[in-house]
Every structure is written in structure tokens, then in C-alpha cells.
Image (cartoon, rainbow, N blue to C red; front, side, top):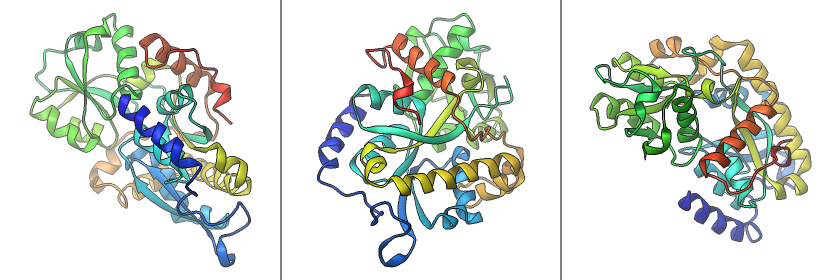
Length: 321
């Protein structure tokens, strides 16, 4: 959290002096010289962002006269300062990162749904896994254990705590450690951590290596939870309103197409992840609705207040479209 806040505060200072990288227009129909508007989008290379890549492939952004460059991030905590500073025009990030940023008065706002939980226990794209011979049977058994998450004090530990509470355990003594998603399968197999929160395709990778899933943490946190959104900074919304409108239209069309064409989602995964074709056919896909589940985002904000991630109650209507 300290690292996020420090980086973000630095980013705020840069915001007034730095024009958004990658986007040369003022929100008109195209970029300089009448060509497409070039934008940089920060996104973690996991299954969640498949609609972004699918939209590029299908020409949905080109239809809006936008040329997208995707820049890999490690998670929402890394995407936030990038958007505040203008390094990214837009980014994909989980709702916890956005709520934390809002609580620190950072000028960010969601513009579109990113992805959601399937809402089905044991059949979600996200889960808590343990080594195959671990004595841990349920999330309640994680009390006092070490759990890997991709970003500390973020959506991973918040939803893992929700699973522990739902199973009747006490999350206060859990030790969370930060580890990149691609490194988690090996860490679980070598028992360097007691458990890990993973998302696809790494959930399938860990299970193929013998790990057991003990809880669907996103399902435990909130019904049909909106996990992430696409967001930008308020300066971009004000000064490049037409660009924001066009980007939003393109990503919403991409989300709808992804929801209706899961086979193509599995295919596009091969273009930006190291997943094998066999694994791509086995993974559980997230839901890709076109509308944000506002109630679930408020539930997360209230949970974060209880966990101490934020100090004051947040009305999520202030940061959602």
C-alpha cells in the first residue's frame, strides 16, 4: 500500500506537467494527420484481458479510429500510477486498486466493465490453491499460514479474507506475500508458500501440477462480482471526451463479442500468454458482461473499510460511470 501511495502521489505531481503518452489528439476523430489515435493501455497478461486483444484482432478499435498498444503490468496497483501520470491513456485494473486510489483522492474513474466472476463455487476463473498433500482442507485452515498474492493489500488478500471468514476462520493471522502470477505454480509445487491465490491460466497450471483448489475467493466475496474495470484519469475524460467515448464503445463491443464467442477467447490467449493450446481449452473463463455490477463494487469497498485498506467509507458511485 505504501509503495502504491508513494508512486501515485508522485504521479499526481507529474500529471499537470506531462501530456498523456501515446495519444496525440485532443479527443477528435483521429490522431495527428488524420490517422488513428494511438493509445497505450496498461494490462496484466492474464485471461481477464482477452477481450482487449480480441477487440484489436477483430478491428473493433480500428472501427473507432483507435490504434491500441498494450503495455504489460503486474496488476492494478502498478496500473494506477501509470494512468495518473499519463504513461497509460487507459488501463485494466481490479476494483480494489481503483477504490484505494479514490480514497487517496487520485483523479481516476472507471469507464467500462473489465471482467466478472462466474459466480459459481468451484467453477470460477479464480481460486485459492494448496499443494496436493497439504493438510489445509478449507479456507478456514489458512489461519496463521502464508498465502501468495500478486499485489499486497489489494484484491487478492481482500477476497482471500472473505473466503476465510465464510469458512468460519479468522483471517487476522494470515501472512500475505507478494509473488507474480507466473511464479506461483512453482512456488506452490515447491511448498515455498502454504497457499496461493491464482487466476487463469495459472489456476489450471497449478491444478495440472497436482495442486488442490480449496475456495473460489471471488465467489465468496460477492455474488457475480465485478473483478476489474477499464479506467482512465479525469483529465483525459475532460479534455479527450470523444476519445474516451470511442474507446468505451470499442471495449464494450469487445466484451460482448468475448462473452458470445468463448472459443475465440481461448484462441486469442495463445497470442499474449505462454499458455499451451491444450491448457487454453481447459481453463475456466471469466464472465465478460458489458455492465459493471455496482452493488458488488460497493460490497468490496465496505469490506476494504472493515479490513483497514481504506480509512473512510467510499461511495463507489463517485468512481463508476
